[in-house]
Image (cartoon, rainbow, N blue to C red):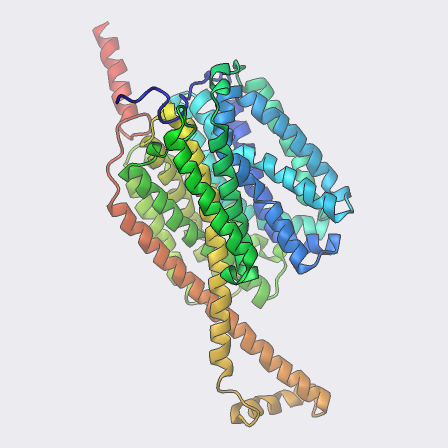
Length: 538
């Protein structure tokens, strides 16, 4: 049987923007809003707990609700942009998002606080998928690499600048600016789109034949799995009925989605769109990269906050000089190289840098200060800039741009799902390793321990020989043991990051050559030669 034109999803067509630089600026801001808000919320959650008087459980569920709805809508955004055009999707979302961000710090009731965060996350899920569709639908091919560079820039920049912003807001401007920053940025994105985005007609044919069931199945399944992963570490995974039910239910709905896409006449995102060796390997590299990158982004601030006892503002200089400033040079270098060499070489260079960073971090000791992490952060930033950018370029190069609407659904699932899976499993790993090292360190200690009594006697000179002084000395010893257990577990986190970078390098071996197209390094050279030949013939 011959496949129909709509066999693998709707065709992606659009109108080229007449003001591409305004679109690029809007992409830049939209990408940053997603990255900054996600990172800023995670880092600033302790301040929000204090501001709203939330308990540990309430704060944990607030974090889940503030993020999970992103994946509910994000996979369908590409289809919505194809049907309604980017203006009708993005502009209202930006304005409503700004209004909710303005209102949240003024809310007092817990129910309203949770509801507004859920709506805000749903709108936040629109921005990144819309960014990808704008590149495909509204930018000339010569701007594609710049557009994808902005998309990739979001990851290392937001992870690093998030600490700077939280430190600035928490210690100087007030925690309310965790939300109010978007009251300025979101309307600016809308303004840029009003001026620069082309007006497009609604695709009524695609709307009438919409695969609503497929969209609902994928969004619901991924949301259930996301919530299970986010709460898994806290609720001890399969020891919790909530986590087990969410995982099983999410997997059943995901299977239902794949069955639905294979049966309906006009599938929204048929799995055949991504079933190729190059695309599958590219996604595997993104997953390995996400695990390795998450280890670095979790371990470094956790050590500096939990062991050294620093506030985010005290860590800011490390990320400014180690990531925020260098990332622009690294992305520029990556653009230059990707125009000239195969993306696989950039992926190898980035993964190698992250492997070296992981080995350096595995030597972590109690003497490390923020400046000690500078080489590690620099290498991680280089790796993040090169690996993610080059892999996205490689994936897009292996995807038919006309089928970008269908492919984008899977890109968002992998992007959000792998990040949440990495964070959840790494937090579980660090918790278990801390418990292991704590048991090993405290195993030889007993009330009659000669070494313990010797240390307590030395501390007696500081705290006194009274019963209170003896308890304070024991507390100091316990704090030291706990700190050392944390240090060893964080070092294990760097070791885990190293193994994931090696896994990524192994996956590179199985990557085939990039197909010739707009993102191939020889494409511009060939196009230039063709134009020159035509001019010479004329």
